Image (tube, rainbow, N blue to C red; front, side, top):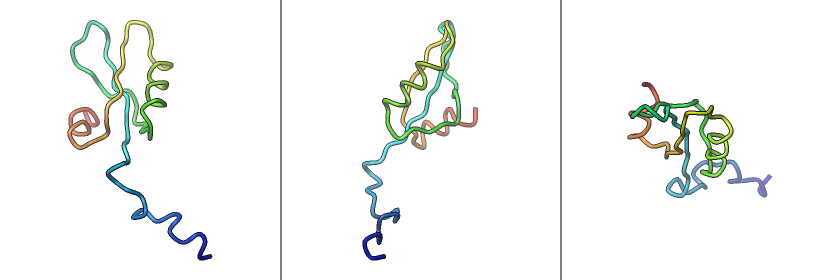
Length: 77
């Protein structure tokens, strides 16, 4: 059991090095982005792939950090 100690402890991870991302989208003719889905990604590359494969023609997407500012701006809009 001692070999697994700390494996699942949250405090063993450095919270400053962890980033989460989500995808926002807009029509190419619009000016404001909206949240695309409520999926969070732990790396930017997988979020970019999700956005690229999920968008229809005439739409563009952007991958942004999941932080307080972006959460307040896009998440519940």
